[in-house]
Image 1: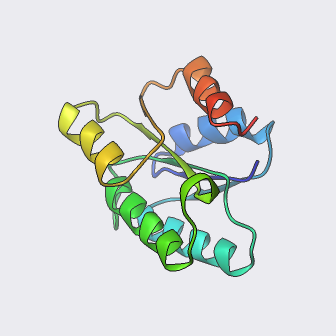
Image 2: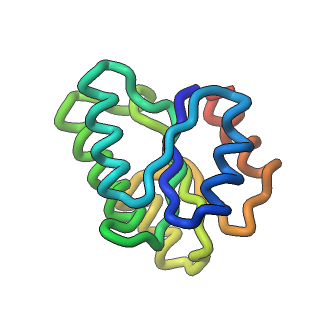
Image 3: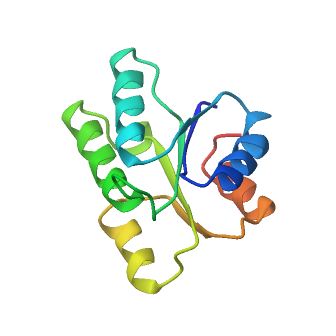
Length: 131
């Protein structure tokens, strides 16, 4: 499993990387802009990410906007449905407005709030068929 962790907080980024690195390669981005650059490069080399874990509140470009842009990139390249990258929002933002926005506009597969529950994260990854 190839994972991109998009998180501006060092501790949260380190925790996710530690948890997910036993399942495959983990790359990191500090904001949505860096994430989109990494995603675009991966698609250019025909080596897309299987999973993206996105924080919402980040500088430069937040996770909600990055998720929408990710789906646009995939759409432009004809990537749809089960071939699309699986996205899990991992954030401290737990209000219903952001949760609904992530599922409706950004089309994420799961939404987890911090502090992160390892078992819930791994459960979602298993449900998505990634491990």
